Length: 269
Picture 1 (cartoon, rainbow, N blue to C red):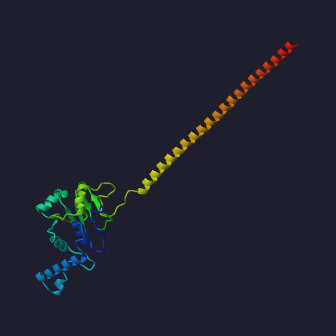
Picture 2 (tube, one colour; picture 1 turned 30 degrees about the vertical axis):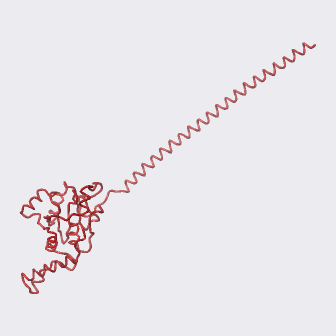
Picture 3 (cartoon, rainbow, N blue to C red; picture 1 turned 90 degrees about the vertical axis):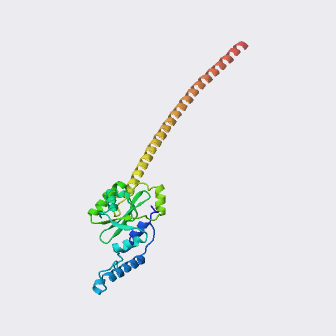
């Protein structure tokens, strides 16, 4: 995901973030867009009137840094790209509505906020600057998501023309992003899976294994102690039997010796 160019929201510079996300690089600055806005204002004033009251109507940017759709359209023309309204009755828009995944990118606008949805490699990503990171969108969900945005009042534009190649596009074409924990269905940061729960479960399992091992060890030790007791008992019995046998043999030897002495004594007499 670090390969994907994604600017975080800075003030009201969403138009800059939107364009750079689309082109996948820091191609436009606020100054660049301000110059385009001023150029458009001057052209509109010269064509439609130069009176003070009339000139105030031609403001393609405001003090907060918000830029109009005309500025974005003009900026894209530098790259031979064109903004086409998603609902326009034209072949390009009709194809996009029938099969959104066949397109390369969409630019969306809602309440003075611009953001980009773009295909990188073979996957779609929500590159909204208010997100903490790009969000993966499956092809299956893309059409549903666009319909949801339209229902919520977003203006949606398709991008015609060839987008500049980028490193992320080349690498992700070969090695797509793995669909793991990435959120696919929200334009705002959503909660990630509860890692603490997974850790707690792992610890509990580990502790249970340790407890089982402890119990097994205790059983082995107890068995060993029992074996030791049996061994000691066997040794005592064996020693006792040995002592009894030895004593008996000794008594028999002494008795035999005494009888022999008595026999020789009688013979001498």
